[in-house]
Image 1 (cartoon, rainbow, N blue to C red):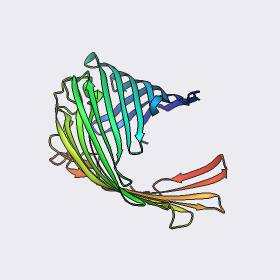
Image 2 (tube, helix red, strand yellow; image 1 turned 30 degrees about the vertical axis):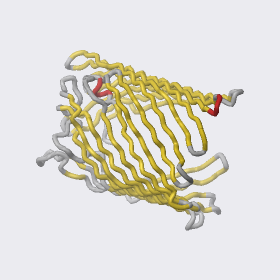
Image 3 (cartoon, one colour; image 1 turned 30 degrees about the horizontal axis):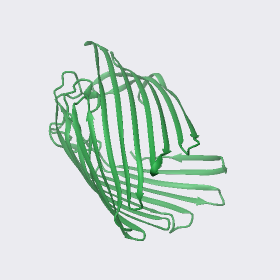
Image 4 (cartoon, rainbow, N blue to C red; image 1 turned 45 degrees about the vertical axis):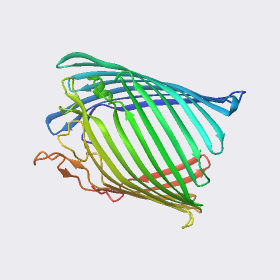
Length: 396
């Protein structure tokens, strides 16, 4: 690559799982994971002749415990607790930044099958977040951070009106201590079995989330960002063949806007942002038509625009491409004890701002194309030799 490495990338990590079956048929699970990464390099930059020096040290610890057991009167109990600690030490040119994020999550859920036609889920959960940042740079030494506690309760029912028609009705209530905001989110879905191998469904829901840490560390005068989803789905499954089509519309409200290029202590933040996304996803998989051959095709169409962050106008974000296509083929050759694979990926161009002409996100990159190939050889039941080549045709 064209980077100048002062300290090559290095990383290590590990995880551990423990399960214990209790005498009352309850199941206790424990999980822990830890990772560490470290690197230092100078990256090329069109605006800085000598490049930009960037270094990062990150340590992440995550543990959780969960319990599933059975109570009287056919109630099932699920309970869990988790804790995470994420520490990052960042250097950008002459600026030094230390971020520490401690989070905990407590959750309890009760479930009961009243009959084959009615099921009930109720529960509550509590989130605790403590974020701290120390910035030491040319402008001085500053400390930022916030504490956020979120309490939520939810209830959901599964109702089977007949062998062909079913519904799921739910509601979630949530209170954010930091934002001092109470929200209620209704959710509803209906599913109808159109045949012995097919069904269609329609779903609606509202969802809330707090603004990102990069905003909350400087300003807490926000409302929760929220969206409304409407999703229609059709699925056909028969004899190793699957067809699925899904159309959706999502409306975004109260997105964060700011008047500077990056989130800064001097930025003027508002909740005046909005946007939408609508699209279609199609998926087909066939493991029947051709002997020892499995293939699938997926296509997605996305039409989305947003007015958020520092956008001067409503526009399609740079990360969104309108058309995406993926074709995957796998063929097993018994005599060779081998599986041969071939795939093709396509993505239409994404928007970017060309500073040489007027406008915002005013041009589009060319389409992305890639053909990939792989070969897996079965040495024994526990050993596999695998080789893959990406972008076989060398497409630029």
